[in-house]
Amino acid sequence: MIPLYITVEDEKLEAVKKVIEKLEELTDTKISYDERTKTFNVIPKGQNQYEALKAVSVIRAIGLGFDAEIAFKLLSDEYILDVIDLKGIIGNNPEVMRRVKGRIIGENGKTKKILQEYTGVYISIYEHYIGILGPYDQVQIARKAIELLIDGKEHSTVYKFIDKAERELIIYKTSKLGRKRTNEINDNWQIVPITYCLNYVRI
Image (cartoon, rainbow, N blue to C red; front, side):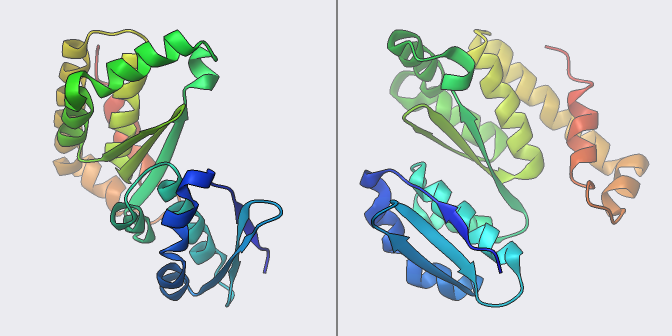
């Protein structure tokens, strides 16, 4: 099987190393750390490459600042990790970076807390990355809300967007069309509801 590689910052190495044994057991993988290349190597013991991908996701989440307990939720098929690279959106200007991160975090962490509570996801802001961990639909709503904050939208506008998006998602999932599409067995079944709903949310 093809080995997978993942790099984390030096200050997060110990946090990852503490959970390697447990992660290997739960994903049936062999995980080693290469001091020379500064990478974790993840090799599936069996034929299931998917489990190795899950292990990589957990390591990446811890590297982004998530607590191990939260990161391990990625072993469930219901959870995903999405990452926004602020440098790719706003560039390297330190002052702009500080201001944008401040908008997302809020005074005493208030905005970040509201985003998490409203959408049911976990958010970690580490260096120039924003990690969003949770169920697929909820992660998409949270990501859109964060993108609106990055674009400079008022916080009240963003909170209204989240409220509308959540209501549209509930309406869709409880409708006949929503139940039919959610029960269809295909690779894209999760994408249908949230894409459909976000198209109907006006900002």
